[in-house]
Amino acid sequence: MKILEEVHEARLQESVLLAESAGGTRLALARTPGYSTCAAFVGLRFGSNHVHFRNQEGREVQVPWGSAHFLEHKLFEGREEKVFDRFGRLGANFNGGTSFARTSYYFVTSQHFEEATEVLLDFVQDPLITEERVEKEKGIIEQEVRMYEDDPGYRGLFLLHRALYHKHAIRISPGGPVDEVHRTTAVDLQACFDAFYRPQNLALSLAGDFDTDQVLARLEPLLRGPQPGQAELITAEEPTTPAHARLEEHFSVSRPHVWMGWRDPSGPGPGMAQLRHRIVSSLVLDLLFEHSSPWYEELYQEGIVDDSFGMQFSCDDDWSYASVEMVTDQPDRFMDGVQATAQRFAEQGPDSASFERIRRAAWGGAISSSQTPASLASSHLSALLQGIRPFAVLDVLDSIRLEEVAARAIEMFDPKRRAAALLLPASAAAS
Image 1 (cartoon, rainbow, N blue to C red):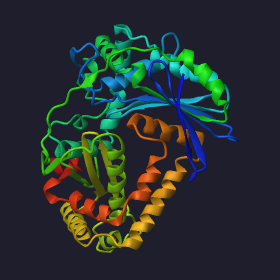
Image 2: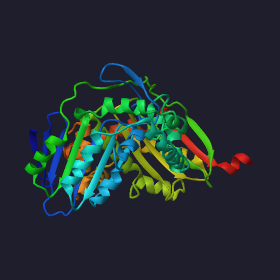
Image 3: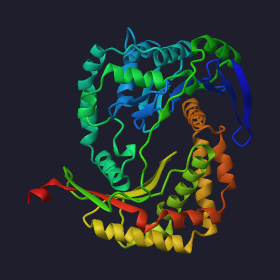
Image 4: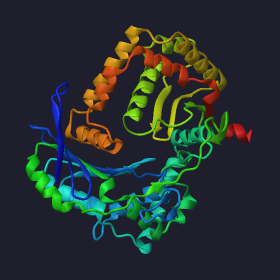
């Protein structure tokens, strides 16, 4: 085991030891003396977007949509016993998840931490994928996919993605369409595992009241040795403007549900550039739409927004957008009002007092993400997968200036990069 460095964060009075196994797996170990629980998160940069790639041998591979999520299910099954059962016997709370660009697995426990860590690394590194097992799982995954498709929030978000993007893989939900689930084979899933679940792609983050040297010694034989070769994602070239100005779909909602988004021409790239882009963009949204903002208050008093209003900013290496949503009987008034207010805000720029208040609130959110072993381990895993130093969010927040946020607001709300998605009551189509 190679010790890389120990990072001390005086502002939070926290430290994390960074290491790397012989096979290239990156590790973060954070001691949290006095806590009764320990947490371990393992993850990799492989998600639902990774359906077209060149594998470690240089061969081009195309797998069905939803393959990363399907593979997650197969790993849960274990070789001889379901993973949930193994963790349950140890008293550990276990789960996992697949997003557009990542898959992660984790547990939190107050007992048998080392044994649970062995289970975590065992099933992630050594699955059993057969055609019989894959066929058995298809019905379960179909039910899960249909459950999400029946959710208005989920449905509307991906309708917005299809409005914002022409070809990008985030147009497709991580579970994939049902027909893609049914055409998935064991060969497809094994190809994904062999290409991406390699030691140098994995990251492991642990936090708890443990002996660091003892844990490192225990981990070394559990982690696989070197496996040369790297898969390369193949992507379609994406135009820089939205695919559709507006998409509508009739659905089982009682009132219209509206999403409006503004996409960037491209993504921010990896590492610190992405972290800074995410933080600055989120500050812009908070300055404009956070409930104590005078801009939000103006929209609220005019009846353009109400308590169903929500906002978010999302990005990864090669995509980036801001969005708002609301349930409203006047979709056009909502969209026009929000767009006009956003543009006025961009023209005038935020005031320094509001900027400092929002930045301090973001600081508080960053601190809260290190209050428990689970939140600390999750935060360090994200840093490992992003290729940034732990606690880098604090450095970014300290370095952001009002002028940078003002410039980002002008860029963010460009009406030429706006698109909308509407879910309309199904009864309106019938009438």
